[in-house]
Image 1 (tube, one colour):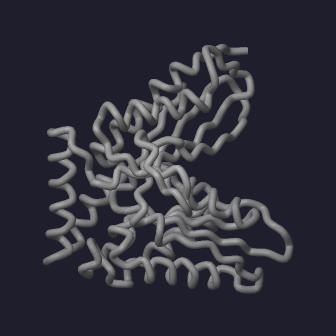
Image 2: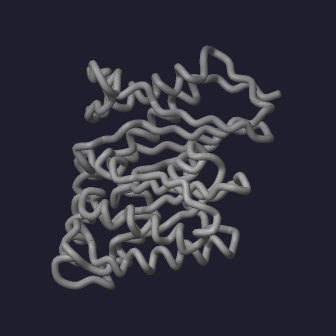
Length: 278
Protein backbone atom coordinates (compact mmCIF):
# COMPACT_ATOMS: atom_id res chain seq x y z
CA UNK A 1 0.00 0.00 0.00
CA UNK A 2 1.36 3.42 -0.98
CA UNK A 3 0.51 6.46 1.10
CA UNK A 4 -0.08 9.69 -0.79
CA UNK A 5 -0.87 13.03 0.83
CA UNK A 6 -3.90 14.81 -0.57
CA UNK A 7 -1.77 17.96 -0.35
CA UNK A 8 0.19 16.65 -3.34
CA UNK A 9 -3.05 16.26 -5.26
CA UNK A 10 -4.08 19.79 -4.25
CA UNK A 11 -0.77 21.22 -5.46
CA UNK A 12 -0.95 19.32 -8.76
CA UNK A 13 -4.52 20.46 -9.45
CA UNK A 14 -3.58 24.07 -8.69
CA UNK A 15 -0.59 23.95 -11.03
CA UNK A 16 -2.50 22.29 -13.86
CA UNK A 17 -5.42 24.72 -13.84
CA UNK A 18 -3.09 27.69 -13.64
CA UNK A 19 -0.99 26.65 -16.62
CA UNK A 20 -3.71 25.45 -19.00
CA UNK A 21 -5.36 28.88 -18.94
CA UNK A 22 -2.18 30.55 -20.27
CA UNK A 23 -1.07 28.22 -23.07
CA UNK A 24 -2.29 25.78 -25.70
CA UNK A 25 -1.67 22.05 -25.22
CA UNK A 26 1.20 20.85 -27.43
CA UNK A 27 -1.07 18.80 -29.71
CA UNK A 28 -3.48 21.70 -30.21
CA UNK A 29 -0.70 24.16 -31.05
CA UNK A 30 0.73 21.71 -33.58
CA UNK A 31 -2.71 21.26 -35.17
CA UNK A 32 -3.24 25.01 -35.41
CA UNK A 33 0.17 25.49 -37.04
CA UNK A 34 -0.48 22.69 -39.53
CA UNK A 35 -3.92 24.09 -40.33
CA UNK A 36 -2.40 27.48 -41.16
CA UNK A 37 -0.49 25.87 -44.03
CA UNK A 38 -3.75 24.64 -45.59
CA UNK A 39 -5.68 27.89 -45.28
CA UNK A 40 -5.63 31.19 -47.15
CA UNK A 41 -7.21 34.61 -46.69
CA UNK A 42 -9.38 35.26 -43.64
CA UNK A 43 -9.11 31.70 -42.32
CA UNK A 44 -5.32 31.87 -42.31
CA UNK A 45 -5.43 35.31 -40.67
CA UNK A 46 -7.67 34.04 -37.87
CA UNK A 47 -5.35 31.11 -37.15
CA UNK A 48 -2.38 33.47 -37.12
CA UNK A 49 -4.16 35.70 -34.60
CA UNK A 50 -4.99 32.70 -32.39
CA UNK A 51 -1.31 31.71 -32.28
CA UNK A 52 -0.32 35.31 -31.59
CA UNK A 53 -2.88 35.46 -28.78
CA UNK A 54 -1.34 32.39 -27.17
CA UNK A 55 2.13 33.93 -27.32
CA UNK A 56 0.85 37.08 -25.59
CA UNK A 57 -0.97 34.98 -22.97
CA UNK A 58 2.17 33.01 -22.13
CA UNK A 59 4.46 36.01 -21.97
CA UNK A 60 2.14 38.24 -19.95
CA UNK A 61 0.39 35.56 -17.87
CA UNK A 62 -2.98 36.67 -19.23
CA UNK A 63 -5.73 34.06 -19.78
CA UNK A 64 -6.17 32.82 -23.34
CA UNK A 65 -9.88 33.66 -23.09
CA UNK A 66 -12.11 35.64 -20.77
CA UNK A 67 -14.14 32.46 -20.17
CA UNK A 68 -11.68 30.57 -18.00
CA UNK A 69 -14.12 27.70 -17.79
CA UNK A 70 -15.80 25.36 -15.38
CA UNK A 71 -13.21 23.11 -13.71
CA UNK A 72 -13.46 19.48 -14.85
CA UNK A 73 -11.28 16.80 -13.27
CA UNK A 74 -10.80 13.17 -14.29
CA UNK A 75 -8.86 11.24 -11.65
CA UNK A 76 -7.72 7.62 -11.94
CA UNK A 77 -6.84 6.18 -8.55
CA UNK A 78 -4.73 3.06 -8.17
CA UNK A 79 -6.44 0.77 -5.69
CA UNK A 80 -3.15 0.36 -3.79
CA UNK A 81 -3.08 4.07 -2.90
CA UNK A 82 -4.06 5.26 0.57
CA UNK A 83 -4.68 8.99 0.84
CA UNK A 84 -3.54 10.85 3.96
CA UNK A 85 -3.82 14.37 5.44
CA UNK A 86 -7.46 14.97 4.67
CA UNK A 87 -10.25 14.37 2.17
CA UNK A 88 -9.34 13.84 -1.48
CA UNK A 89 -12.36 15.69 -2.85
CA UNK A 90 -11.80 18.76 -0.70
CA UNK A 91 -8.14 18.80 -1.78
CA UNK A 92 -9.22 18.86 -5.44
CA UNK A 93 -11.64 21.71 -4.78
CA UNK A 94 -8.97 23.61 -2.85
CA UNK A 95 -6.50 23.21 -5.71
CA UNK A 96 -9.06 24.69 -8.11
CA UNK A 97 -9.87 27.46 -5.62
CA UNK A 98 -6.22 28.48 -5.24
CA UNK A 99 -5.55 28.38 -8.99
CA UNK A 100 -8.45 30.63 -9.87
CA UNK A 101 -7.92 33.06 -6.99
CA UNK A 102 -4.14 33.39 -7.16
CA UNK A 103 -3.90 33.50 -10.97
CA UNK A 104 -6.79 36.01 -11.15
CA UNK A 105 -8.90 33.78 -13.38
CA UNK A 106 -12.59 34.54 -13.88
CA UNK A 107 -15.01 32.71 -11.58
CA UNK A 108 -17.67 31.06 -13.74
CA UNK A 109 -19.48 28.73 -11.34
CA UNK A 110 -22.90 29.45 -9.85
CA UNK A 111 -24.29 27.64 -6.81
CA UNK A 112 -27.69 26.75 -8.28
CA UNK A 113 -28.44 26.15 -11.98
CA UNK A 114 -32.04 27.35 -12.08
CA UNK A 115 -33.13 29.70 -9.28
CA UNK A 116 -30.49 31.61 -7.28
CA UNK A 117 -27.55 31.44 -9.74
CA UNK A 118 -25.19 33.10 -7.25
CA UNK A 119 -21.50 33.02 -8.16
CA UNK A 120 -19.49 30.83 -5.76
CA UNK A 121 -16.60 33.32 -6.06
CA UNK A 122 -13.84 30.72 -6.32
CA UNK A 123 -14.90 28.58 -9.33
CA UNK A 124 -15.70 25.59 -7.15
CA UNK A 125 -17.02 23.00 -6.95
CA UNK A 126 -15.11 21.21 -9.66
CA UNK A 127 -16.88 18.58 -11.76
CA UNK A 128 -15.01 15.43 -10.69
CA UNK A 129 -15.01 12.03 -12.38
CA UNK A 130 -13.40 9.14 -10.49
CA UNK A 131 -12.02 5.84 -11.79
CA UNK A 132 -10.49 3.09 -9.66
CA UNK A 133 -7.73 1.24 -11.50
CA UNK A 134 -4.93 -1.16 -10.65
CA UNK A 135 -1.56 -0.10 -9.29
CA UNK A 136 -0.26 2.54 -6.89
CA UNK A 137 -0.33 5.70 -8.98
CA UNK A 138 -2.82 8.53 -9.35
CA UNK A 139 -3.41 10.13 -12.76
CA UNK A 140 -5.03 13.57 -12.78
CA UNK A 141 -6.46 15.01 -15.99
CA UNK A 142 -8.05 18.45 -15.99
CA UNK A 143 -10.00 20.64 -18.38
CA UNK A 144 -11.09 24.27 -18.15
CA UNK A 145 -14.41 23.93 -20.00
CA UNK A 146 -15.79 27.10 -21.52
CA UNK A 147 -19.51 27.14 -22.12
CA UNK A 148 -19.59 28.68 -25.56
CA UNK A 149 -18.64 25.21 -26.76
CA UNK A 150 -20.32 23.24 -23.96
CA UNK A 151 -23.69 24.76 -24.80
CA UNK A 152 -23.48 23.39 -28.34
CA UNK A 153 -23.05 19.76 -27.27
CA UNK A 154 -25.76 17.10 -27.43
CA UNK A 155 -26.90 13.55 -26.74
CA UNK A 156 -29.14 11.39 -28.90
CA UNK A 157 -30.45 7.88 -28.28
CA UNK A 158 -30.02 6.39 -31.73
CA UNK A 159 -31.48 3.07 -32.84
CA UNK A 160 -28.97 0.28 -33.50
CA UNK A 161 -30.17 0.05 -37.12
CA UNK A 162 -28.96 3.61 -37.72
CA UNK A 163 -25.40 2.36 -37.31
CA UNK A 164 -22.33 4.26 -38.49
CA UNK A 165 -24.29 6.51 -40.82
CA UNK A 166 -26.64 7.52 -38.00
CA UNK A 167 -23.68 8.43 -35.79
CA UNK A 168 -22.09 10.47 -38.58
CA UNK A 169 -25.31 12.32 -39.33
CA UNK A 170 -25.77 13.20 -35.66
CA UNK A 171 -22.19 14.45 -35.23
CA UNK A 172 -22.41 16.53 -38.39
CA UNK A 173 -25.77 17.96 -37.29
CA UNK A 174 -24.43 19.00 -33.87
CA UNK A 175 -21.36 20.69 -35.35
CA UNK A 176 -23.39 22.35 -38.10
CA UNK A 177 -25.74 23.84 -35.51
CA UNK A 178 -22.82 24.86 -33.30
CA UNK A 179 -21.34 26.93 -36.11
CA UNK A 180 -19.30 29.89 -34.86
CA UNK A 181 -20.71 29.64 -31.32
CA UNK A 182 -18.26 26.87 -30.37
CA UNK A 183 -15.24 29.08 -31.20
CA UNK A 184 -13.89 26.97 -34.06
CA UNK A 185 -11.68 25.37 -35.15
CA UNK A 186 -12.95 22.92 -32.58
CA UNK A 187 -12.05 19.57 -31.09
CA UNK A 188 -14.99 17.18 -31.22
CA UNK A 189 -15.41 14.45 -28.61
CA UNK A 190 -17.80 11.62 -29.45
CA UNK A 191 -19.04 9.02 -26.96
CA UNK A 192 -20.83 5.92 -28.22
CA UNK A 193 -22.46 3.24 -26.09
CA UNK A 194 -23.19 2.67 -22.44
CA UNK A 195 -26.26 4.56 -21.24
CA UNK A 196 -27.15 8.19 -21.86
CA UNK A 197 -24.93 9.42 -19.02
CA UNK A 198 -22.04 7.12 -19.92
CA UNK A 199 -22.08 8.31 -23.53
CA UNK A 200 -21.86 11.91 -22.32
CA UNK A 201 -18.99 11.00 -19.96
CA UNK A 202 -17.15 9.27 -22.81
CA UNK A 203 -17.57 12.29 -25.08
CA UNK A 204 -16.16 14.63 -22.41
CA UNK A 205 -13.31 12.25 -21.65
CA UNK A 206 -12.51 11.99 -25.37
CA UNK A 207 -11.60 15.69 -25.45
CA UNK A 208 -8.68 15.13 -23.06
CA UNK A 209 -7.21 12.20 -24.98
CA UNK A 210 -3.82 12.83 -26.62
CA UNK A 211 -2.89 9.35 -27.86
CA UNK A 212 -4.15 7.73 -31.06
CA UNK A 213 -7.29 5.59 -31.14
CA UNK A 214 -6.11 1.97 -30.87
CA UNK A 215 -9.15 0.30 -32.44
CA UNK A 216 -8.70 0.58 -36.24
CA UNK A 217 -12.47 0.71 -36.82
CA UNK A 218 -12.92 3.72 -34.57
CA UNK A 219 -9.69 5.29 -35.86
CA UNK A 220 -11.20 5.14 -39.35
CA UNK A 221 -14.43 6.66 -38.05
CA UNK A 222 -12.47 9.53 -36.48
CA UNK A 223 -10.67 10.20 -39.76
CA UNK A 224 -13.87 10.11 -41.80
CA UNK A 225 -15.70 12.40 -39.38
CA UNK A 226 -12.86 14.92 -39.37
CA UNK A 227 -12.78 14.98 -43.17
CA UNK A 228 -16.56 15.42 -43.42
CA UNK A 229 -16.67 18.11 -40.74
CA UNK A 230 -14.00 20.06 -42.58
CA UNK A 231 -16.20 20.24 -45.66
CA UNK A 232 -18.85 22.25 -43.74
CA UNK A 233 -16.99 25.52 -44.44
CA UNK A 234 -17.61 26.85 -40.94
CA UNK A 235 -13.89 27.47 -40.59
CA UNK A 236 -11.85 29.42 -38.02
CA UNK A 237 -14.08 31.83 -36.05
CA UNK A 238 -16.97 30.78 -38.29
CA UNK A 239 -15.63 32.88 -41.19
CA UNK A 240 -15.29 29.96 -43.60
CA UNK A 241 -12.36 27.74 -44.47
CA UNK A 242 -11.03 24.21 -44.59
CA UNK A 243 -10.50 23.88 -40.83
CA UNK A 244 -13.69 23.47 -38.84
CA UNK A 245 -12.46 20.55 -36.70
CA UNK A 246 -8.85 20.33 -35.55
CA UNK A 247 -9.50 16.78 -34.43
CA UNK A 248 -12.21 14.21 -33.64
CA UNK A 249 -11.82 11.73 -30.79
CA UNK A 250 -14.24 8.81 -30.43
CA UNK A 251 -14.58 6.69 -27.29
CA UNK A 252 -16.94 3.75 -26.93
CA UNK A 253 -18.39 1.32 -24.37
CA UNK A 254 -20.64 -1.76 -24.37
CA UNK A 255 -24.36 -1.05 -24.45
CA UNK A 256 -27.80 -2.67 -24.44
CA UNK A 257 -28.91 -4.72 -27.44
CA UNK A 258 -31.74 -2.25 -28.10
CA UNK A 259 -29.69 0.94 -27.91
CA UNK A 260 -27.05 3.10 -29.57
CA UNK A 261 -26.48 6.09 -27.27
CA UNK A 262 -24.35 8.79 -28.88
CA UNK A 263 -23.05 12.01 -27.32
CA UNK A 264 -21.09 14.86 -28.86
CA UNK A 265 -19.08 17.20 -26.65
CA UNK A 266 -17.35 20.09 -28.39
CA UNK A 267 -14.40 22.11 -27.17
CA UNK A 268 -13.20 25.43 -28.53
CA UNK A 269 -9.96 25.89 -30.45
CA UNK A 270 -7.91 26.12 -27.24
CA UNK A 271 -9.06 22.76 -25.78
CA UNK A 272 -7.46 23.71 -22.46
CA UNK A 273 -6.34 20.46 -20.84
CA UNK A 274 -3.46 19.03 -18.85
CA UNK A 275 -2.43 15.92 -16.95
CA UNK A 276 0.03 14.59 -14.41
CA UNK A 277 0.79 11.24 -12.77
CA UNK A 278 1.59 11.13 -9.05
